[in-house]
Length: 176
Image 1 (cartoon, rainbow, N blue to C red):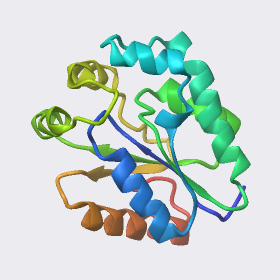
Image 2 (cartoon, rainbow, N blue to C red; image 1 turned 30 degrees about the horizontal axis):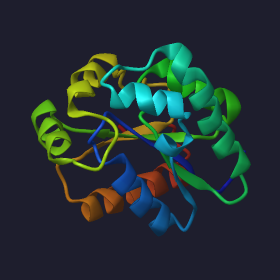
Image 3 (cartoon, helix red, strand yellow; image 1 turned 90 degrees about the horizontal axis):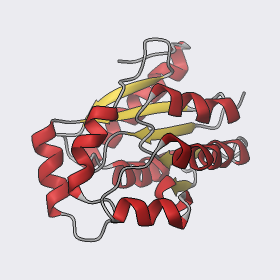
Image 4 (cartoon, helix red, strand yellow; image 1 turned 60 degrees about the vertical axis):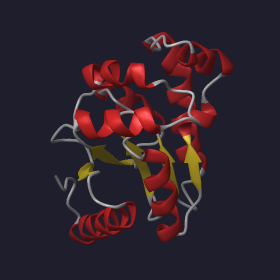
């Protein structure tokens, strides 16, 4: 176990994982990794063509995400990663058990509008509905919290930091 924060900012596409994750890493003074950068080129090409990934596509990628956390036990790390299913989060925790998950949650309408406004992302807005269909909320036994993305990024990060700190101070496993 480590005292350095290991935080996975999760959620569907357009929830703000990269923006919030990078800002959170800055406040926590730890490195930041966007898990999209860990995808093999074949996965990126598949998503760009509008085809969702299969679990067989995801397993090596999720292992790489877990390895990134394990490699940063001493320094801490924030990773932006969809981690939509419990089995995906379990796969990450199989490599590094101390990871805490922050689920960025928002309405379909808000996130569809955000996805439609993006022009610089490989994930097309057309795959958003498949992500909502895949999403399994954090279980009561998972270490993490849920944050509403309707707030500004700075307010959201401040809330997440306060809640992570309160959880760490109290020894609580969940802050939903």
